[in-house]
Image (cartoon, rainbow, N blue to C red; front, side, top):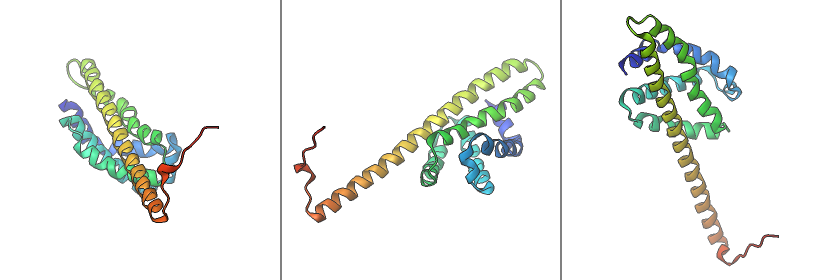
Length: 168
């Protein structure tokens, strides 16, 4: 939907400012993140989000989310906090979009409803994509740890296949 793309391109600064004010208040974990880091993270997220909105392709989001998952896991963020940030894009932009479509000549309400439908589907797809990338990252870390433990046990001469575990 070209109107949504135009909205995000024309109102990026205003949306960034609103998100920078809202995110640390709504999600306490982000109060630990430096404002410049949060701003840069939001800029990348909005760029990737706009790509998903326009093209339907999530390649740029997956690339960014791989980096984000690694950083936020190392900072001990909960996955819910990260997804909450993405959901705030929709919540923060909704009143701004409503105002823009109210000024639209013709059937602004129908355009607003259609735009919100597209925005909601895009937001939910974005959240699902992040969860996929996050889970893949965690799985890779678990696999890496398992390989490390196997190697250490091998060097120490411990054969875990000979251990029988009983539930008590």
